[in-house]
Image 1 (cartoon, rainbow, N blue to C red):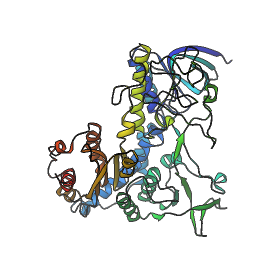
Image 2 (tube, rainbow, N blue to C red):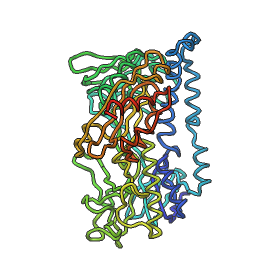
Image 3 (tube, rainbow, N blue to C red):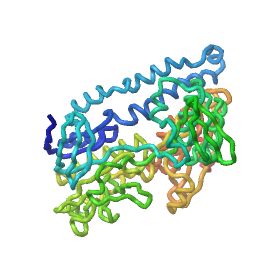
Length: 508
């Protein structure tokens, strides 16, 4: 017998991935009650189908290649990767797709969990179709937070909908490496998974309408392309896929513009992601789809959702007391109180797990502070309640081999934003890199604000350069003047010596 259960919490969080967990945790630390609503595994995409399993698949190949790049170690390497051992280790990082440990953490933190599908029915009201067969009508005293992550964006290619293709979920959780893999898309996930599967024994063809890793400087992405080719990955770049069809033997054939074709045993479609907002009842609070039929949220620096008219942050004005009419803006209730927030991929600001968790911590804190009357109106940049790093210092790593990392603005973005900008770039050729591996190839760039003489952005490409990134992030967030950064002496001999060479080339 099913029941309809009515409950009230201070904060309702729809989505119990890493982002939702962090929002709820910070709200509870702030003295509020919180409930997480989740229809799948607690811990979300990153834990089970994205960050953790993909890096677990990549790391053994990178470690092996690293050993093969150093004489002495190279001669000791006599075997190829053990596929079964790699997959077993990958499984351990996903806890074999069981969320018991995550659920225990939620319980120990004082957060309540309801398993089921949740959607908004009215301001501060959420209904849940529980997986236990019960229905739940939930009320939020202070806030509802959307932390539902993102979904794969599937391109409108003729025949694709009729094919049994992989998304990143299937590619990261597979228990068998296909003999032939075609990858559609040359973004971060496509590149990483193409290389991981190639090193595990698949013959991989990567097809993309544009270039590889198009958001990064060409000098950096070219190094990654060379790394993929060295692993046997065939790159068909600037190539449009006209149609896809499944053959009688189960294989899949991609036909390109111009008539060439590729046949593979599996097809991975990795052509981007979009906020997962469907079925959340957002229309009930005035948020409607755009001309393309897709829902999109606009948030302020605290994660507060802006109204349907794009002007009022979920009904909040500078004093936090309501929208223009107190009712019309999305998230505005009869008393004008702001209540609807979005964080992580669902907000569409910076679709990276670490950045989503950063947003979540701030959103959870500001909800708790507003509940106590300790925070009203717009948060000051770089304050405890503002997600300012989303605008200035988003770090990103492509865990390919070689790695590609960036933080902050590119030259083009800096110019668009009105900065007087210059850049300095050079190959990574220092004692630390020469010792790290024979024939080390890398590239580095700094983007500089010439008016203030501070760094706006940085890019590094090369083996193991991800560990350089946080220093650049700190320099950008801290707005460290170049003449002070000159006194940050890199240890010798490390790859970090490239910092000294960049500053010397700039003229210091």
